Image (cartoon, rainbow, N blue to C red):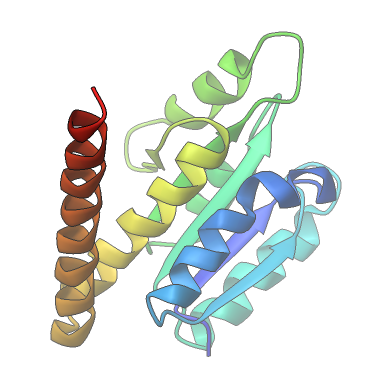
Length: 164
């Protein structure tokens, strides 16, 4: 049973979104990582949402570029949280995907994170925070990861200052 589903609109998005799946797995969160398209495979998208919800999926993460309707298509089919990752895929530098992902009608929200790999990582963190609301063990792992991140910054600062 996947706790989080990660959908990418095209296989070309895999490298960009892979950090999301890796971080979720590092945090001990089960995920399904697959390709489906709001436009090219709408029946597959709908079937995946239905199947994964029945299996207990609690959060959907959707990455797409250009028209970027995948997150919205998923949000229209579930009451579970949907997180959108806009992907740079056109000459518009990702602005098209960002606007398509963030501009949802009332009642069908998509939590939208940053573009590309930074967004993929933050989508994983946000999904983990959502799941941690009902999972004290996961909440502790998140607190430990944040503390480790703080220690890394302090160590880097000490090394830099020692050589300045």
